[in-house]
Amino acid sequence: MSDAPNYLLRAAREAAQLTQGQLAERANAQVERATGKPGAMDADYIGKLERGVHRWPNRDYREALCVVLEVAADSDLGFRSGRGRNTTIGSNPWHASGRDDVERKAFLRVLAGSVAGLAFADPLADIAASAATAGPPRRVGQAEVDQVRHMARLFASQDHLVGSGLSAQAVITQLSISAGMLEGQFSKDTVRQQFFAAVAEMADIAGGMSFDAGTHAQAERCFRFSAGCATEAGDWAMRAKALSGLANLAVHQGRADDALSFAEMALVRADRLTPMVCSVMHTRHARALGLSGGHRQQDCMRAVRQAEDRFAATAGDEPAWITYYGSAHLERDLGRALLHLALNGGAYTEAQQRLSAAIDRFPAQPSRGKALATANLAHLTMQRDDPMQAVQLGNQAVGAAEVVRSDRVLEALRQLRAAGVQHRTMPAVRELNQRIDQVLRVGRG
Image (tube, rainbow, N blue to C red; front, side):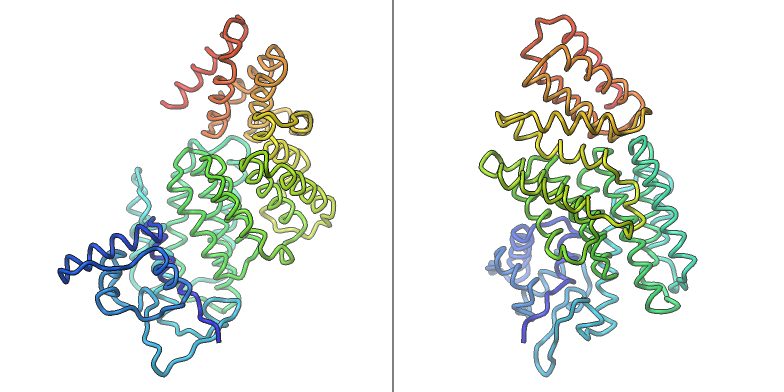
């Protein structure tokens, strides 16, 4: 019979923001401090513990891991002796596998702690902290599910329109309060499942808003938390969305291998995704492939076509959180997927056409989606085509950036400015760069 993955250990490591190698290194140092003898753990060993290949490390290793990960007992890290106890595996990490309620609650403590431990910089921090440590578990019913979903979608609607500069910390506070209810007393199992799904949605939105505000470490923790809650809820679509958020973040940071890993994880069970959700996941995969370089160009183009095909198959039965996604968003995402290839010597006509189509299809008022498409098209045009047309587009993007507060838009303007250096003798380009400098100074302030 197969070994069950150790979700507790993995969640605790991710909450501590450690790689498997870093955890091994710190645990080895703790072993040496406690015993006088160095430990011999490495990333491969930690990986085997997380996959459930080993369930019961020796005493020194267990104690060291507990100290490093700041938990009180072996059971909080999923460690247990194999004597006289068998396990099975199912699609749900707790109920289908038959694991006991004590272990499930330990997992929830680690999961909630990964958000409660986020750094707060406003007076609402005390509210969040008290929510995570309040007395007896509160009763959670359908009203609480609906409230979390309603709040999540309010934040999302504002984020899509004007960005996250002013709201990112507010959504983190709301997420922490919601996370503190994960160990509540649920009126029935279906409500528990729905509540986890609602918190997963809130966490994904918090991740996206943190990303947009430029707080990348916080964004990554929120996306990982969302994926964990969605897995517990059995919500494959939200799990894929959270993983695609991690993929987008990795693309933004230039981490091509990580971007590909997260994007491909999001598509592992594409058969369980609705057409629209699947289409979006293919756009994220295409972006990761485009970032990987020219040797993946054909794969990138294949992912672009798959995204188009799935988008065309949409029949209306989609999750409520994706109803905002239309043809303008699709063209923007596919244009951005082709952008890296186009900027580095590849064919750029299709990238230009898609970004132009996105700009035309977005509503006239400024929005983050339109600002990103405009700044990306200006960058591509400045580098590969007509600098005067790029100046016109760039001025439009700067105007939008003065309304939309988004670190991602500011980064696109930084890239446009860098591309304009080759045309710095042109007065119009110099004037554009001066406008960009002003917007960047305001954005940093």
